[in-house]
Image (tube, rainbow, N blue to C red; front, side):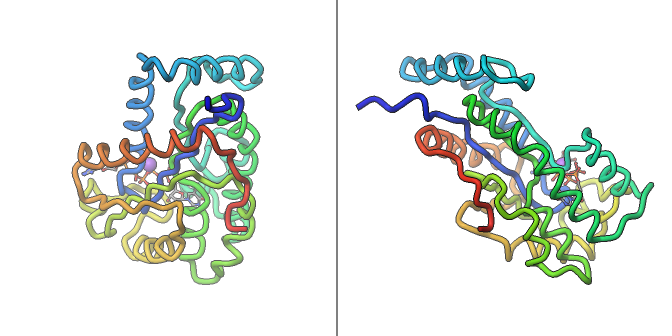
Amino acid sequence: QPTDTSTRRGAFIVFEGCDRAGKSTQAAKLVEYLQNRHKQPLKNDETSIASNLKVSETMTNNSNDSEVARLWKFPDRTTLIGKMIDAYLKKTKDLDDHVVHLLFSANRWECMNVIKNILMSGTTLVVDRYAYSGAAFSAAKKDLDINWCKSPDIGLLTPDIVFFMDLEPEEAVKRGGYGKERYENLEFQKKVRKVFLDLKDSSWKILDARQTIPELHQQIIETAEEVIKKCESIPFSENLWK
Ligand code: T5A
Ligand code: NA
């Protein structure tokens, strides 16, 4: 029985972790791998790719028709909300903790329609940080309750997998140290890691981020391939933390 190609979609793959854990490095390597891996499709992949191309033609965002994977990053600092977040992180602007938390969440909500279109076109999206960062960084602050922090992100698109890059902040500091942005200090990062680990759910795969870049990459591509295959035949769900 052939699979119904009309339901094929890309996978929603998220990388999470404390600062300097290696998220951006692995997210970029995964996208590069997927793009090369699909350049020469196997025979039985041909229908899948053909159907993806057809859906892409109807898209209004500037996605490339032949795109098999795309990198995304939160915060998306390019939007109007993203520019406020950027100023906050660079400490050129102070904002109330509640306000900035809601901005980070709004920054995800404003991207949801574009993200859904990308996934429906068959493109796999690799996302560097998501709502787990949102909850973990805010709840690590003194006065923000974890349930309050999770609530604005309830109902976002659910990731198909979250690669949690776990690294003790003491180890992270050794990686060239933290920069000058807000949150980049050891004591705060220790609190963030604790909240992160409490947020673990069935979508998580925890990776020991002390391993080498190639070792981590190998584990990530193996799991990612399985997830991408599985996602082709199941719809995405919009029930994060519901
Ligand atoms: N935030 C974010 C919120 O408060 N709320 C939210 O809702 C969201 C989405 C954004 C800040 O905003 C907060 C969290 C953050 O504080 P950002 O722009 O994502 O920050 O942060 P960046 O500075 O871009 O990234 P990070 O500091 O988090 O680093 P990464 O991406 O985890 O690490 P990476 O890949 O850049 O690597 C760091 C260094 O380590 C080396 C790399 O070469 C690099 O030098 N490295 C390794 N070294 C040894 N072994 C390995 N396996 C290595 N992998 C990478
Ligand atoms: Na990063």
